[in-house]
Structure formats: structure tokens, C-alpha cells
Length: 311
Image (tube, rainbow, N blue to C red; front, side, top):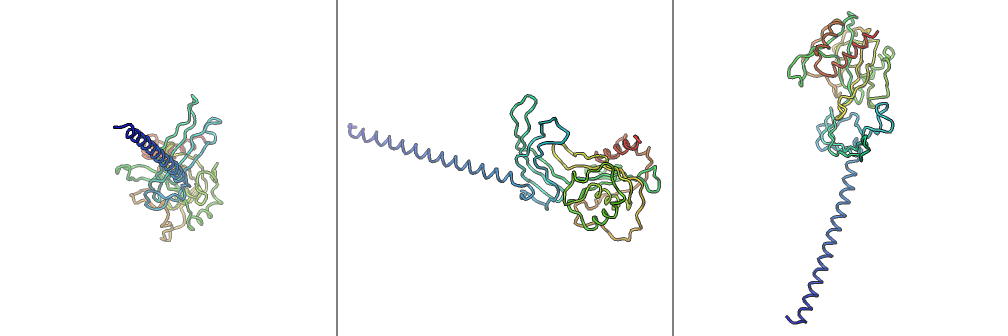
């Protein structure tokens, strides 16, 4: 190869290398820009308001409360600490009963002041808040009306139970009328009416009164709230409000009309259910022996026994 040809070849190689570098630079810039836009788009999608976000799978609209960033839990953590921040809330599956979501959670620094940890696959279940009520027997004030029933998750095993149901996210006209008619007679001790339920729905007390009337045809004048409890502190599942209802009467004879709202989420279950009257000591022994097989039932009865015992 002559010097002239060699010079042309070297120039060609240098030009080719320059063009290759230019193409690589353009490609890398395109990838970087695409990545930035994707990150912005994904962030906006995941952080959009969960109440308006479409779920990946929907079996009907969930209308209950949705847990979102709660940076402090009043009275439960040291000053300056928090229980974590919800960075994003992506709905995976929903039904009228519940909503399964994937949260991205930023945890607070630990005791060693390590950097906050971010968990992007925190599964969370939003579920309607519920009430449970231990009801005094109208015919025998020293006894209580106890349900005997089975449930799907109990594998056909019979269990003792108390009246229970969800706090409806929207209140039917019938439930509104019932709650209004009973309100003057029922002021639950220590109840916080503005905490723990949807603003457009029932209060825990109204839901408890409605369920007792629907399930037992009983109205009570003395109501005691026994607290408010998270079902699962890591996965949600709503809050439970237990009550003790006393000084009760059977309502007037039912005309045969079904006052239950057919569109209500908490429509009556289909499992076989029997009602029995049990003396105070029988109930006390039953809860200690684990005869109430759901934790909400046993929690309600145990708290009621403690409340009665301290008086």
C-alpha cells in the first residue's frame, strides 16, 4: 500500500470512529431521555389519587376508606417518629368488599439513624371498618344473646359469635331513619363520632344499632364503646369497633318487610345461624375456653367481661 493510499485509509478509519462515537452518543442520549420520561410517567401514575385510580382487576367498585400517608400516629409513637410514609398506592384488585393495593413505603430512620428504607412491594388491604356487639338479653338482664354459627374460613366448625357487620360507606334511607329514631336513647360512653369511619357513611354507633336490630330485632338504650382496633397492623384490613349493649327490648313485631338495603355491602350472610341466651358466667367461661373462634368476637366478649367486672 502506497503512502497516499495509507493516508486515505487512516482518514477513513478516523471518520468512521468519529461517526460511531456520534451514533453512540445519540443512542445513549435517547435512552437517558426515555428513562427520565418513563420515570416521571410511572411516578405520576403510582402517586395519583387512589380514590380515582383504576384497578388492574375490578370485580365491582370499592367505596370504603383508603389508607394513604399517615405520617404520625397520635399518642402511639415517640415525638418526632412516624410509622412510615406512603409514597405510592397502586390498586391491584378491588371488589365492593375490599381493595388490594401495592404500596411503596418509606420507613423512618431506625434507632441507629440509618438512612430511611424504601419498600416498593408492600401489599395492603383496604377493608370496610366493622362493628361487633355483645347484646344483653331483653328477657333476662343477667344473660346475653349469643349466636352459634359457622363461617367459610372455619371449615364448617361451629363457633359462638356476637352480632357483627360492616360500617356501610353510604347509608341507606332506612338505616338513616333507624339511626335517627334511636339516637336520643343511645349515647355510647366515650364514643368518638368523628374518628374511624367514612365521612359519607355511618358512625360506628349507628352501624351497631342497625345490625343489632336487623339480626336480633332488638333495640337497646345503653351503649358502651369498648375501643377501636386495627385488624392487622402490617396489612390493614380496616378497624373494628366493639360495643356492649344493655337495657334492651325486643322491637315491635316485624311486619314481614325486609328493611335491609339489597345494595348494601354488608348484606346478611348465608351461613346457618342460631341465637341462644347464655348467663354471664357461661359467657365468661366460653371466651376463656376459646369458644369464640374469630379474634374479633373473642376480643369483643373479653373486653365486655372486663368492663362488667370492674363495676
